[in-house]
Image (tube, rainbow, N blue to C red; front, side):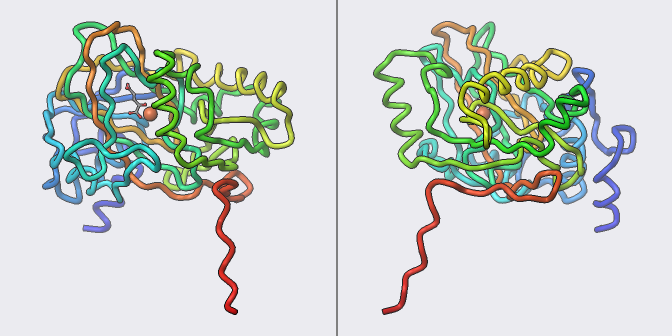
Length: 310
Ligand SMILES: O=C(O)CCC(=O)C(=O)O
Ligand SMILES: [Fe+2]
């Protein structure tokens, strides 16, 4: 069994037991003919993980999972974890609620929860209610973005580190009423986190190098805020150019799983006041390493000093 599972780690689509249909040229595939849930066998899970490593985000139509099925399936991919500051969705054990009634959505490019060191390795998002038109989600491939950087920029980022924090400009990201915004910010920042990550992360399973940035970045280490902002814009432009991106038009019941170690994503907030309701399961990840093997480290909250025995 183990040998068979390992065979899938680098499997091509043709070798996979799954029906995999790539969508964009560099990222994203739909997987057909499978029903997700907590009862999938180890070979199928290994094949899903291999497809995820290869395509970075994978889509499954018409799953219509319950909260319990969503959570049971997530547990087969690793250790499900709740968001560090946002309370779990009602009736669930660790799902994150994304329920928009005011046209708001997470509409700026990010990787989930990068303000902590061991941020999630994968997220599993399911659509419950979707707008008639609009409300798509887009994902960008951080690996092809890195590979495509001109050599001088690659040299620049190879040794660079960035500070990520959940204390950032919520208005720029969410853009809704001041009151709701403030409420939202309060919940999100009930604890302030700051983490130093390498800008180039080496993927622990594929060995691929990818750009690790997104909207939680505050600044680059040893650069001031003005230079940081300009460099950030240059790099984000490379990551999010259409060639590196896939766009998914949701139908109720769909599931998307992304490799949060190699991608960024954002919602497209073009659906006015139509209802849009999704729930996300999140899988624990490991501490990133840069090209030279250096690990990410927490800056805030500071580790509490060990108690001194009196
Ligand atoms: O609402 C969306 O399309 C994306 C939400 C998001 O950022 C997430 O689920 O992590
Ligand atoms: Fe997200």
